[in-house]
Length: 228
Ligand SMILES: C[S@@+](CC[C@H](N)C(=O)[O-])C[C@H]1O[C@@H](n2cnc3c(N)ncnc32)[C@H](O)[C@@H]1O
Image 1 (cartoon, helix red, strand yellow):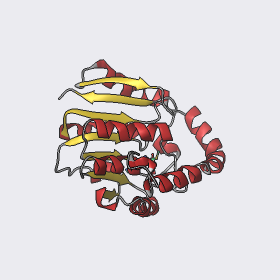
Image 2 (cartoon, protein in one colour; image 1 turned 135 degrees about the horizontal axis):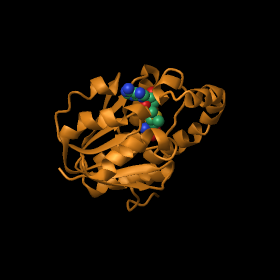
Image 3 (cartoon, rainbow, N blue to C red; image 1 turned 90 degrees about the vertical axis):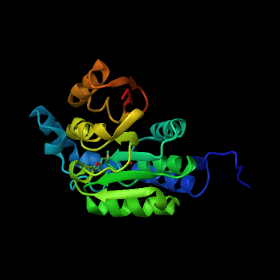
């Protein structure tokens, strides 16, 4: 029998769905190999990430947060009692499941997910429901800069993991809705060190109202607390 002392991340059905999705995400490698020449050429030309690869070109790729990063999302949301979470870039729903499990374990809440590629959004919804977390999901399909215009509750936690040139625009869009003490976590800081330097410098300068540091988990997470 499973111990009730286990976190819901370590119990069925959340654990089973996450285990399977993390395993399936290893298949991303074959898509990366196919896209590599286009990516290298684009970088040499100085193109932004969004100009090199469209969401449609990457519709089969999970490109998820890794397990340690996912657990950090869960633990942070638990620690601050997050009930209203916003996520930029849902993909197939791996990070969404970590966040939705935390809002449920906090007594109930909602993760506003955003995904521009409709086929990915449909699969994300199915995965979150399979994990038993469908009631925690408000999935908005389309460009996050449009779909996040309306946020009716103060935001406790913002997870930024969509296309890299949109990190700052999404932060600026959501910042007026952040509550004091809200946490903003952004993924892939090491992968896109050059592109994301202005984002990191803005947050670490203190000028934007944040205290911030880069954490060496997975591909690098910028971990920022909003002073309000
Ligand atoms: C790195 S993946 C997200 C992975 C996900 N957070 C996880 O950990 O499982 C980035 C996703 O952002 C989506 N995306 C890109 N531009 C977007 C936009 N403007 N609005 C909403 N989603 C977008 C892409 O289609 C892609 O699925």
